[in-house]
Image (cartoon, rainbow, N blue to C red; front, side, top):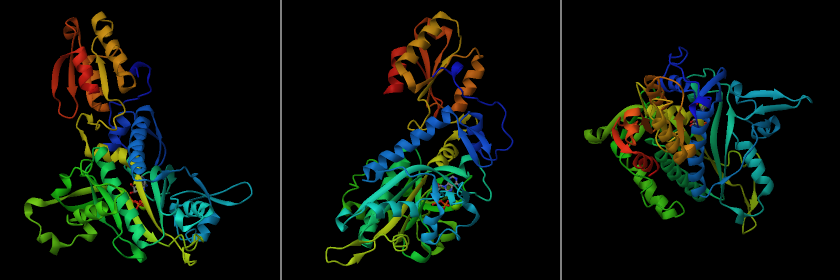
Length: 437
Ligand code: ATP
Ligand code: MG
């Protein structure tokens, strides 16, 4: 895109409603605008990031065998009366009425709806296991929406729902999701640590929250430094092989990780000091096994091979897709602005024309822009060089291709890596190769 013709409304001033870095930077870099408390519009740059994140989430869900669907945002209250959650859900639920005075709601989550849909189509015990997910907007009327998209009222979530014939099957579905999550967060450039979470009346240990480390996080966390070192993308676990999933689970449980509430000081004391890590974190995902909590009241049942009635076991698996945009920025920024990981950046490179109207600068910029296509944001505004440097750092492009008259006269450009600040002078062709390579 050409910046002169793009709607990327960057701000020089720090907006005073924003308390944390990611919220400030998302407003300043022109990613979002608030339209009501906890409700945001995604502008071109922000929308590109959100879609990049959603696509990585999607690819890893698909690789685990989950199938994508799309359920509506508006749900019938009757569905929730069936599960018994309608009254109990409380004020976080946004309740609506249609013209016939029928009760509707804007979905805060989809357990009831997916259970009904699945029940209406499943025919036999042979249809199991299955896992269905969607990436859809949710609404929760949070008491204190804050920190921008981190705790919004309308937010984008990936939620998956697994269906298995028995507990053993559900455990496999759960482990698949856990491995898929470790890979997803790594691809997003994050260190995410799974922490055992409350299971409530269900019991057992099949509930984990995934926490991304950031000093502004809402929860205090304690964990084993091994979590920082494992490469889940290179690990050879086959997500479709139960034995591999078992080995993966053994590896996971061998490493300590806990939030403040679950922290066990006795076990912690047995861990060598060099491996102890403490910090704060942001919850970006939550996976949960809940047995027949929804299948039983919603009437999901199939006949087993021996004629007996089977009530399927379910789990649900959430990722806060829009919260991740904030979490990634919390984990990756400096005083000058955002430092996007390559995988989610709205543009891989910014092209900075330091002297618009200079024949050599213009020609080189056009050449680079043509070669990089949609992966580049070309700063072709009639602004001073200083303003272009500041905006490029603020917007956080992984690469900056800086084109000034002195270098351009010799066919050279400067290439800057945002994360390290490293700069090198290269030929146009070499710069393009580095960015696309
Ligand atoms: P929290 O404790 O932060 O309120 P939760 O336990 O209510 O989260 P879940 O119901 O497990 O969250 O939802 C799955 C994921 O959706 C969470 O891990 C989080 O990343 C995201 N999420 C939940 N509430 C919000 C919100 N208000 N704004 C943005 N993302 C959210
Ligand atoms: Mg909540």
